[in-house]
Length: 125
Image 1 (cartoon, rainbow, N blue to C red):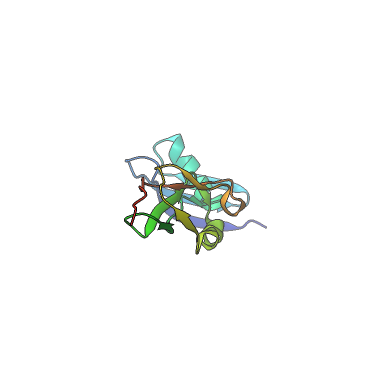
Image 2 (cartoon, rainbow, N blue to C red; image 1 turned 135 degrees about the vertical axis):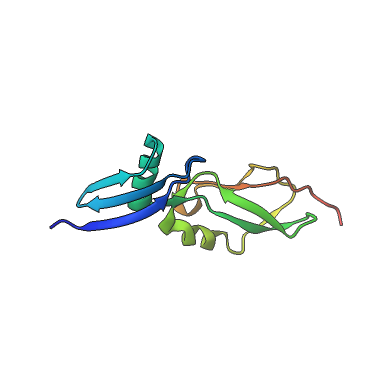
């Protein structure tokens, strides 16, 4: 039995923004509208295993600001985003923090690390 699905996607891998038409026919993924190989790879990944970079904030003590912006250092499967956010809920760290400092390794078993998005100095109050 052949299962067919059709998707329209906008490629976000380069500034061209190709309008992709993707058709799944059984185990085959057919892509049209891409101007390069990267667009085809993006479309196939997006329909088979969509991935995202997760951005959020965590509490920080000893800084001018109450929250530190953080993100994953690589994409995680879309179906793991809630697990990543849940794992960070209530997490509190102490200043100082440097940009790109690892805050948590292998978050929710995804293989991605949570890293700081900015420096935060320690402020004596």
